Structure formats: C-alpha cells, structure tokens
Length: 204
View: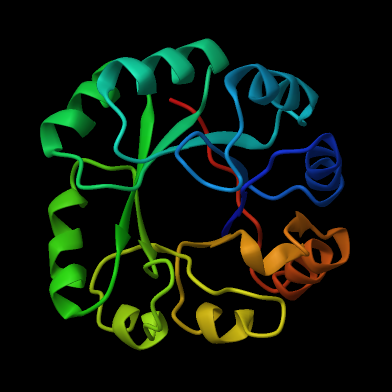
C-alpha cells in the first residue's frame, strides 16, 4: 500500500513524516495555499529520511518550469494535475522522472479518460475536484485499472477508501487542523493502514 502525505510545507511536517514513514511526501509548486517555494522545498527535502520518496505537484506549468524545479530538487516523482498531453508526459519521462498523473473525477467519462495514461504514467491518481461534492468512491469502484485514490480522505473515513483496494492513498487536508499538518491525524492514518503493508517505491 502506497501512502502519500501531500502539502508538506513546514519543517515540523517533515519531522512528522520521518517518524511515521509514509511511502511518499508531496510538495506543491502549483498555485495553492500549500504552495512552497523552491528554496524552502530544498531545505525540507534535505531533512527527510531517504526511504521516503519525494513528489513535486504541478498544474498548468510549462516544461521549463517543471523541469527546472524537478532537476534542481532531484525529485523522485512528478505529479501532474492538469490536462497534460501524452507528449508532455513522455518528454518528462525521457528526462528520467517517474510520473503520477492525477485525474479529477466528476463522472464515468473521467474514469474512462484516465485509461489513456495507463501505459505512460507510472501511477494514475483519481482525485475529487476541489469544491465539488462528488462521490469519488462510487465512481472509482468502476475503474478497471490500478490507481491511487485521493479526495476527502480522513482518519474517520479511510476504511471506505481502502475497500476499493487501491494501490495507495493520497491524503492532504484530511491530516490537517486549522490548515496545518496534525501529527495525531497522520499517526491515526498510518495506524489504520497497519493491516495493509506500507510499501516502498524503488527508483529505476
């Protein structure tokens, strides 16, 4: 089971992750309340345990910006959250990066659309559109491919997401209190995943 804690932006957040050992941490470089600047990200990544993979989250950003940040920080994964083309993804992979392709799911058409990334992205992430009341669990049940699931996961409801038998879970706001990462919520998530072995993702 892959576990990704996203929206990491403080030294405390990294310290929490070093204790709890999720598979991945995500740092957001797109416009977001959780956005981090590259120099801050570099400091945070220098603190993390080497066993935890780094993910840079981008949306509607061009090749040069994505590559500049990803190469400078030596990211393990690039996560793309917009309508990036197959060519865009192929180019980034040719530069040595693994790709998580996020797809915002509102209906079954979006589930079907996700399939075009199966043979090019390393992982498909099914996510709920921001600010929309979408039953992503109901929609994701119809996916006939492996995926990581996100969108509204909390310590209280994570079992419902795990019933989908996903490759992994991606949690951000659900492990926060007043907009900041909450160690106890993160710890509860990890404890509830003890029956599902938290896996390593290897480079290469």
